[in-house]
Image 1 (tube, rainbow over the protein chains, first blue to last red):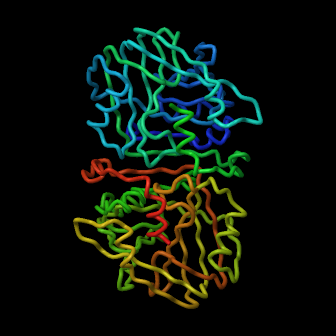
Image 2 (image 1 turned 180 degrees about the vertical axis):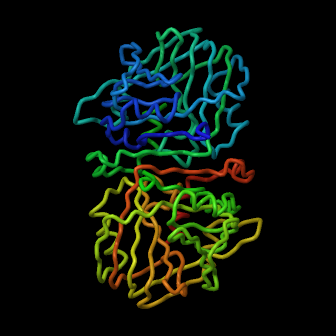
Image 3 (image 1 turned 90 degrees about the horizontal axis):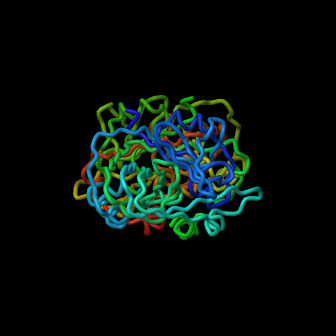
Length: 235
Length: 235
């Protein structure tokens, strides 16, 4: 079943290393899923994919639907299968993550989707870089931060086991898009007022790498510092 | 193209943690490739897959073709595509690995296949364990070691980038099977006399996890010690 598979193009280690070239068009990405997260070429905003449409949230907070020929250096998508949602109310992000990890395996990749009202939502967006690209840690230091209260929208993202730190961002990696497209980005903090939570576990993790990209081909990726760098850039 | 994809069931971290249950039948594994490496349920020998046939090399050195209903906890397979082989002569394993890394990207998964004559070949095999399973490090301490001079056969295995340590065994992970089935196993050392080397890079790394296995579901995998444990068990 295609709902059993999460598809990822690129790795988080590539972003940490400044490999921001767009190496897959959005049109190809959407063949592998209708929901997910990512970023655009040059780190042009935070991407949210919902209902087969890809959006980017830019540094000025504007939300734009992406054309099929826009390219991405990193993205993760799956086909949404809503079969077992549960109602949740009044949860901090820590409460939410603890609840999910109590009910699911820490060794399995799964998607997290929450539709509802969020008492608090704090997001960040990165912004478009020019070559020579800096690393993700430096870009994250210049991020724009947005906040909202009692916004309605969708949280979408993934849990990756600790083992995949650097391949993905281990733990939870969640993005947000409000229904009115006025607020979105990479979630730094949130509180759920009320909503519906769906967890979709995956049997298959399909990783697609830009093997024809010259910078990727020759880059020496320093894995020793990855864990610390990812925590600095993503949290 | 199916030749662009390497398919892996399970992770090396699972073996390190003593998760030796067979969770995929060989018949299903062979749908995803005709060449590769792995091990059988309970760590019953070193597996070699060649020409669509799966073999195990047991602790007593015997080689047996595996029936389709034998199950595996960990295996990696691909469809062999011989399009660019090169002749090699008189290479130590260090020379060989240095040569390959000079010609290929350290960030890309690829298969390594060598058919030819091996001046020296040193292999090890693990052997079948019973529950409660120990970890791979303890099992590797009790491995059987075999050596051969001027044997004819096939080296088959993979290179995985450093980033995937624990998911796979990072660097080179090579197995051997002699043409006469008298020598085989996980390669500890070798010297190539003369042979043909094929490198097959992969765009896709497809990881398949045993999400329905109860031990896997609940196991807490200690990623901090993984790198040291894998080096101890696999080299």
